[in-house]
Amino acid sequence: MTSFNYDYLIVGSGLFGAVFAHEATKAGKKCLVIDKRKHAGGNVYCKEMEGINVHWYGAHIFHTNDKEIWDYVNQFADFNRYTNSPVANYNGELYNLPFNMNTFYKLWGTKTPAEAKQKIAEQIVDLHITEPKNLEEQALKLVGTDIYEKLIKYYTEKQWGRKATELPAFIIKRLPVRFTYDNNYFNDKYQGIPVGGYNKIIEGLLEGIEIRLDTDFFANREELSLLADKIVFTGKIDEYYNYQFGELEYRSLKFEVETLEEENYQGNAVINYTDPETPYTRIIEHKHFEFGTQPKTVITKEYSLQASKGVEPYYPINDEKNTAIIKKYQDLAKTETNVIFGGRLAEYRYYDMHQVIGSALAKAKWSLKMLNFNGL
Image 1: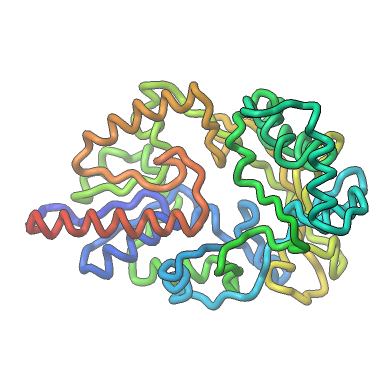
Image 2 (image 1 turned 180 degrees about the horizontal axis):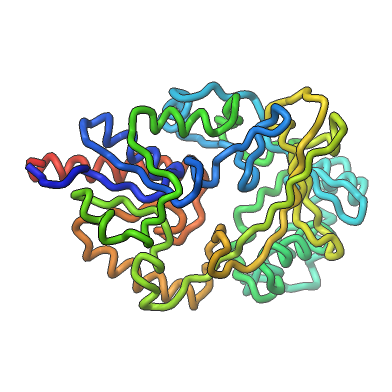
């Protein structure tokens, strides 16, 4: 028998930590979940304002093709029929996203897929791009000069804080381009927003589990580490190892939240601002995620900036420098016997929500199997 108070100390109450804690508790293990924030849920946390569930850390739209994961989250909340159909605003001109026949018609007046493809082909024929060396070349090859200049270039440069010619080509490869009249951003079979917000899912996952909020692991590391046999760590892996191989770089976000004395501000949940003059990248109107009819509305203007100490990290910068650094941390992590690293910060990778859940389920299953194998 272990002499520890808990089987698992779970650092972070976001989706990875909450799913892991739920699975471990279901298997009869005792968990303690801690979080440095004053609320549970990590970046999927919603704050209620004017009866609206505000996505406090940016828009989160659940989508997956995995029926097991869809059924898993539906244990904890009902999902509505929300379909992600963002709109791009370029100096007052509005275009449908993802790039589809509606976008092409607005730009060029083309009415058939053949006409749209011909227009793109005409724009790239003289560029002679065979193997794209950077994001700009990849985007031009995909959609031509008009779409690149109006809808990709400046938005992307605001997002990443560097020129498109300095960004790797792979960043743009996941961008949907369709020759159909379809404004649905995702191709996944299952999509929606939990009715009542994501807090419903986090509360369901953590029901009956001890949680300590406003608790910084690094402020009491030694004491907290002695509480459990295993640590599940979802924070920054470089911070866990005291930045011994250097600091990993991230892009961060700044949010400006406003309550407006009107029922409907922009008519859509997400509008991207793709011109260089507008300082923010997008405006989110939260009530549209749940088809709200409240008399007021809440919007968030989202700005992209470089992460620094004290600023929340969001998106890993997967360039050569950071790839070399994370490899060293990952090699060190493989030597650990009592620490499990999981989630976007601990693994230094971009995760969609369904991917985080899938990863947490797999790692929990493996860890529980090992605990039982060792007779604990």
